[in-house]
Image (cartoon, rainbow, N blue to C red; front, side, top):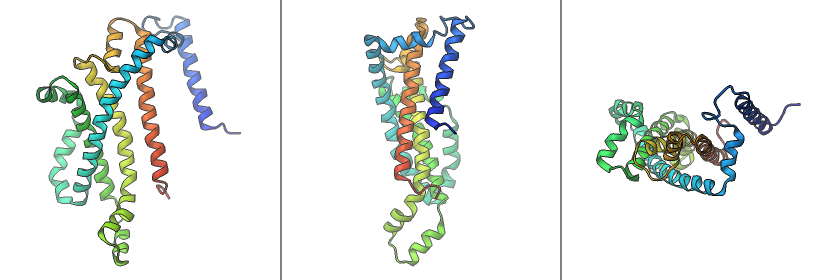
Length: 251
């Protein structure tokens, strides 16, 4: 009898934690560099430390989601335009692909010059990176749409608005949902990097770096685990919403 996927995932997680604990107990790795999972768990039990981590997480999530929202809306809008009008996409294709290939960290100094070292530069960098992902995904979805369905709708007398809502939009949404999943993870990554590189008072990225410099490794790993949990949760929420709204995908 096959095990439920959730149960298998739980077993896999427990196995990794047990292996981690044994590696530390038997001295394979220096506990100063990799504390046991029990020591990391103790960080979450301590009320004062946990409150500080959650406070940092609030700053990180605020920056990441602000950039994600701005980038998502602008990316989808521009992606639809360049997807529907092929000459515009051909005109901008090299520029889009070039910017998409640039590491976000390389662009951070330029954003700092224009927007300073505050939250504006961090949010703008996240928005820029997410918008490129959403632009490419949306444009690809528009270009891959089934022209026959649109033609049939036109023959049946559907208006342009009806064709867009009932035919084109349902075909684009799966690509947009994929772009959102990629973008939310990217937003969190870029926010953490920006918090580490820029002078930031609060944020998980800054906390991870500070704890590493002070060799407070249990706190460092606790912040890393919290970051992973945030990214996983955000990705899972988008996946669940997409499954409910885009129930026709693959049918």
